[in-house]
Image (cartoon, rainbow, N blue to C red; front, side):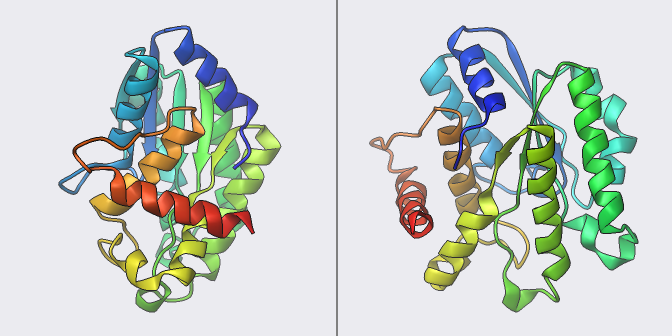
Amino acid sequence: MAESEVIKAMQARFRAGLKTRILAFGSSNTEHFLPGMHWFDVFELAIRNTYGRPHTCINTGIGGHTTFDLLARFEDDAAFYRPHLVFITIGGNDCNPVKNLSREQFERNLFELHRRFSNMGCAVVFQTYYAPDPARNGDLGPFYANMDTVRRVAAETKAGLVDHLVRWEAFRKAHPDRYLLLMQDGFHVNHRGNTVMGVDIGRAFGAPVAPDASGLWDEALDIQQRMDALCAG
């Protein structure tokens, strides 16, 4: 996973010990609605264990939301906190036909979100989703297309990108039984899947999670290594 200039700049900020407010902004992939570790919790611990305590983490994810919803609540749930870094993880609900949101509008909304955060001086890191389960979902073509749009907008805006989907798809195909153990349902990860996401995000920011006596990280680190091997080829 290539390291972007945005992520390098945030690493430098952490190393300098500068106070940093970090916002998680998205839908159910971001909202902490299940017991156990969430990917943002894992990221927070990873940063703390590597850089100390320069950061405050704020999660305003709301399940079911689209890019239109994020724009509508931008002032209250984003600008209000004046974040220095935002993770934007969105796009699954935007491809629901009930939402009647075209791919072109989804792209425009992503650009607008980036513009608003950038105008505040906030660094933007987009994320793709984990891999949904094809056996429990309908046509996933629109979802994959939206994730391609996320990648394209991240590249065009020079934002950061954590591309979970490419890694999760490789793992899902190679280890279907272990993949299912990471899923709460066909479209959401459980605490085990959240932990896998979190160790990947932490590592992307130069804050890898290390094994410890608790054994809490063992499964996620093993899966991370397997994803590494699958994606290396």
